[in-house]
Image (tube, rainbow, N blue to C red; front, side, top):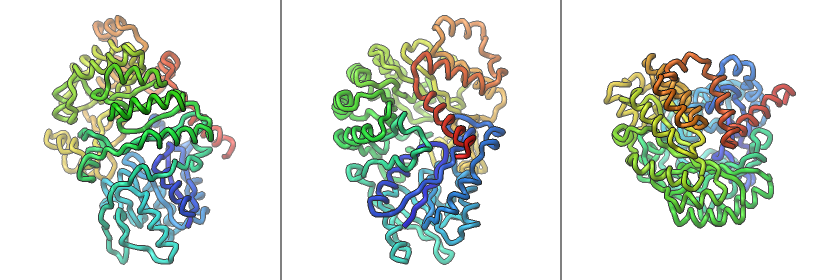
Length: 495
């Protein structure tokens, strides 16, 4: 059987994992990839440039000509409208070819997704066992409508099957990186995860929903040996220069982390980045990260208002614990970045000033990554916002249909004056890591930042990011530029 994945904007580990499993079982797998330049749902949104580089018609043509037995879309909240457009156009030309949607958004809102005329099936939860069973039944000439984790349409009825146990990560094969060859710079950065799930249920995160979906906290972690073997084999094959661990939180187990970092330093020896959490950081861990080659650890701080963080975000670490963890990184000389959320319930300029005064003291903070509060379907932050009167039932309907905005744009913020204020601090936070502390004090004292919203946001922010990347040796921005250069070149040359 031939399975065609349809993805956009970035490398997708879920597609690579499933592709490896399907190929092991003798199936053929292809990728139809939309680079989504200038509307990549990660960094850029420039409408006129997106229209200029729009590749959707060509991707649809590729899908139609692929002779697929089944077409699968990997869907998250931000790309749902794109996936619907693509699937609708494909269905017009391939009315008898099954289309299945899977990913975090279809898992969260399967009842919305399955109603689309162009969607035949929905994968609700993990796909590693369900999709191979589906293809096997199709190969035998009859779809099995009882496969767990799958929803089907059959004779105008919707069949909702039960959930199966979570996958044992130790049984999974290495990712099929060949799926994305030519579409992402595989020789530059290697993406992987060592775990699934998260020990926390932050109100704004999709893991908040997944804890309820899985009926408990999911904290699966691969063995140190399995991860090291994967990295060693893939390093020999792709000769990449850096590793990017995409775990929700990388260091949740101190014993595992210390053992892994010791082996990583000896057997892999490449720079890497990961996502951490302040409650799992101390001086010993910070030193181990630094010595093993970590060049950036990402922490979700979100706000320095403890009451907001506790009451609305379900984040119960204190400012003292945050400061202690980041001080441990500073002492070890370990570079890190801090995620900050704008537009949280009840917050205003005083909160942003307090955060500025905190961030400006950090010695090894290479970047303050700014997010605008965005409501994800069926998370507790949606309930909280409704209780506070920030959103209504109509807004929730839009959220559940993935029409609520993106993390990197204005998201849920509706007040015009607040938007201006946030833009000012967003620009200040972006440049702050390369500003002397006294310079930040001068800006605040004379309120020089209050007019920053008048400047052209995109070129200024790009220039700032480039300066920060050069001064702080942050390869992530250069990786992103490489991705754009690769696809603009392909577009110009007709590739």
